Length: 329
Image (cartoon, rainbow, N blue to C red; front, side):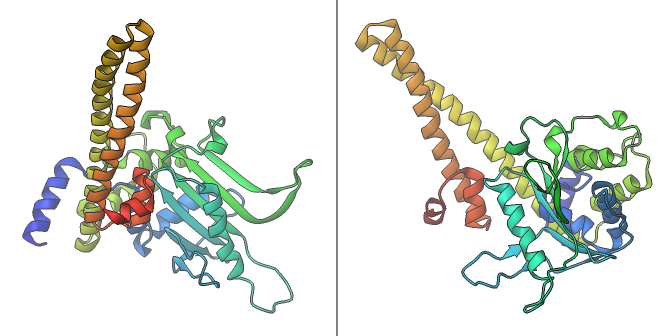
C-alpha cells in the first residue's frame, strides 16, 4: 500500500470499519465475487420464495440494445442460477424519477436475449429483477412492508398471466428494527446489515447466523485485497463528502432564505403599513430566498461533482438541475 493510500485508509479506519453496502459499486465489489458467492445465494434464497438456488454464475452486467438509438442496460449485478433463471440486482441509494419504468426496461433485455431470431417458440426461463432501495416508492406509499413483489396479473380476477417475470422491491427506509428485535429472521438481519453496516464497529449479538458472520467478514475493510479496499474507500469518501455538501447546502439555503425573507417582509410591511403586508412579504421572501439559495448551492455541488469525474446525467439527478446546466459548468 502506497503512503497516500495508507494515510487515506488510516483516516477511514477511524470512521469506518465496514463497507457501505448501499453503494452500488461497493455492493458489487463485496458480493459479486466468487469468494462471497455463498452469501449472495443465501440472500437470493431469502428474497425469492418460489425456487431454491443451489448455485449461480456471475454474468456480464452490460446488455447492448439491438437498436443503436436506444439505451443500453448496465446492471449492478447480473447472475444466472443453476436452473438457468436470470436474476438482475439493482442497488439505488437516491430516489429517481420513473424508477418502476426503468426496472421494467432492464427486464426486457434478459427476455430478448433468451429468444433466438427466427425461433418458433417464445419459451424463456424466469427473469427476476431485485431492487434494493434506500428510498420509498410512490406506488408503495401506503404499504408498510419492506418487501413487495410484482407480477403481471389480470385486472379483475387477478389471475397470473405468466410466472416468467417478477419484480421485487426492498425499501430499506421502511425497516426500523434494532438488531435485538430481529430474533433470528435471516432476511431482516440482511436488511439490518445493508442499512447499518458503515455505522457499526462489531457484529451485534442478535446476528448469530453463519451468513451474518460471512457478511461481516467480507465487508470488513481490513479483510479486502488492496485494490478492492482502495476502490471501496474512494467510493465511501466520495459519498460522505457528497452528503456533507448537500446537508450544508440545505442548511445554508434555509438560513439565507429566512434572512432575506425577513428583510423583504419588513420592507414591504413598512411600505404597505399593514400587518398582512409584513406576513405576505416574509412568506414570499422566504420562498424566493430558499429557491435562489438552493439553486446556487446545487450549482456549487454540481461543479464539485463534475470535478470529481461523476457522469453529468448522474449529477443532474442528484442536484435537480438540467443536464445542459451541469454540462455548461
